[in-house]
Length: 321
Ligand code: SF4
Image (cartoon, rainbow, N blue to C red):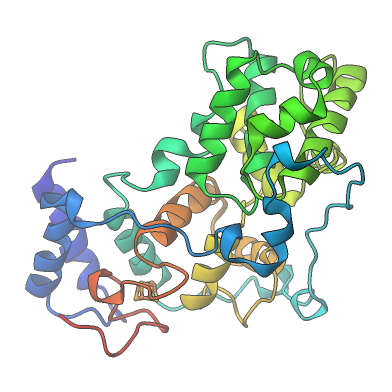
């Protein structure tokens, strides 16, 4: 799409009824920053990194400091009781200005400059490897990615691929070696156990491939609904649901894309799937994760740079133009 056509799209959308965006000329000027100066958008680190989280501090000992933990804590992706009413009852409910908001996010994300664009789970597997191996590596990268920056996950996957990242090999190598290769991903000790157990199950039950459905993926140690839905999309090219991580959860609540505030990512997934057209599900995770990494960050979102600042219910009213 040419630059002029892209600008026309924004101009048209700003004129839509109920849209509270300012005059088209003002919006065009703002949008043009995203077309002309892609480097204007700085990549900053995600403040949700486990190093800054109290609960993850104990996991930060080096693999050289001792053997990997032997106990696997059961995985959980809980729904809060308050979120359980956010089911498909809300079919007639749609957030205000959601199409305009989505268009603006697509414009802000068009240059694909966020960490997730270069180092997301879809960039971690060896595309040249046979299908089952490539899918296995995608699943592993998702398992490593929870509570971990994309850069750290990607680097860990590169170290695993150096030693032939197959279920056979992950089962065979020592826990110490595996720990050294994935460190410093968040909860690395626990993930050593998850990777070992899951690889063993995949060899025994799936001939080294991964399951092709949500239920069996979620039955694997260390795999929850968010990972399973993204895995179905990336590994099997099948859209089964929206992958909701901390970025999607936070931004959906800021934009009021949920009828009432949700307390868990799983609650947000249920609420989003109740109204968001299914043809958009597959792009939501990637779109919002990158938007959350670059602009709508956990701490100090860059509202002054955001094309949604005049229609976002959570925009910082003190932003500077
Ligand atoms: S205006 Fe601010 S809070 Fe709203 S989407 Fe943009 S960056 Fe996020």
